[in-house]
Amino acid sequence: MDKIRIRGGRPLRGTVTVSGAKNAALPLLCACLLAPGNHQLDNVPQLRDIRTTLELLGLLGVRSRQDGHRIELNADAIENAEAPYELVRTMRASVLVLGPLLARLGYARVSLPGGCAIGARPIDLHLKGLEALGAEIRLDHGYVEARADRLRGARIYLDIPTVGGTENLLMAATLAEGHTVIENAACEPEIVDLAAALTQMGARIEGAGSDTIRIDGVTRLQPMRHRVMADRIEAGTFLVAAAMTGGEVLVQGAEPACLDAVLSKLRQCGALVDCRPDGIAVQGPDVLAPLQIRTGPYPAFPTDMQAQFMALLVRAQGASVITENVFENRFMHVCELQRLGARIRIDGRQALIEGVPELLGAPVMATDLRASACLVLAGLAAGNTTEVSRIYHLDRGYERLEDKLRQLGADIERLPAD
Ligand SMILES: CC(=O)N[C@H]1[C@@H](OP(=O)(O)OP(=O)(O)OC[C@H]2O[C@@H](n3ccc(=O)[nH]c3=O)[C@H](O)[C@@H]2O)O[C@H](CO)[C@@H](O)[C@@H]1O
Ligand SMILES: C=C(OP(=O)(O)O)C(=O)O
View (cartoon, helix red, strand yellow):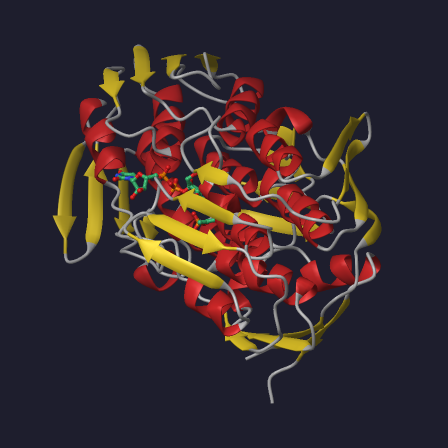
């Protein structure tokens, strides 16, 4: 398995360009199942999760061609409605084929994704919502089997504003008969991006980005042509990297409007943040101030940035508290940060971080996507050498992270498996 080796202690400087958002591209690719014809998606990041999704869509009968960051897909013939365990277990977002398959074919069989490192992550709300739309759902040997001759519009209240659940139901409702209202919907920018693409396909949607989404079903949709939004989490990761190394970086293409909570915390820790027409520039402070962070559904502070901020706060001057409200087990990076000398105590959903003046490099192991990013960032700020193993997690969600960091002056290299 590949590793990343970092020799830390260099401030990052320069310009880096943000890629398309993984979490927008995945539902957009699944949305292609809704309409026959030739779809085109631009600004798709080159990531392992994207390759897995294309493999899954291929199994279902979608033909695709990738040219750099453009993907063309043809969804004329959906021959198969089954998403197998082997693929779903490697990428939970595969469950996003459920709504579109059901809406288009009236049937879908999708493996239950199961838990993952950061939490149990059930899909009960996706299933309840589809049942409200008239689907008959059966669980059979770890698979969800869903059937409906034609979905019918309904009023759906989500107990939790689930991102994937909102996306699955939004896609399904576009082809349902009549009016659907999703209440307590997730408001994440990726949902706005998906709704924009669906609207361009002919769907009738109002309120995406708010907690109430209204959909008037149509009988057919046209293929999409869409440019995937910029990745706000990748952008945030570079901003944190610059701030914690005392560097100065412009993240080109970053959208400040999607990053309010993150930018506010960067300013509170002492960084200078400048939102410019071409992106966001950040200059790190000499001394990092401690922070109180509480993660939550958008527009609150994103759980996907929690681990990266912890890497920053371990060197702040004073005590910080991070409360993780979205996932019950998203502190797996803590014991690895401790190997570098961090002083962190976990108390339930809270991490209490006592800043230390310096970290010292060590071998560490990545456990999930953002934990990997956190360890790479910590390695950039630590003295000596840090080696991060199991970086396949990183490749799920960051496009050429080590190349982009090297371009900013980091001493970082990928070591191929022995
Ligand atoms: C591909 C993608 O976009 N992934 C993002 C998406 O994941 P994902 O869509 O899986 O996250 P959800 O918003 O669904 O999960 C939020 C919380 O709701 C719970 N829940 C969810 C669905 C359900 O049916 N029942 C239930 O209890 C989950 O266990 C979790 O505790 O949003 C998360 C929260 O911003 C991000 O961390 C992920 O990066
Ligand atoms: C948790 C994440 O992704 P996924 O939902 O694909 O596991 C993430 O992007 O941080």
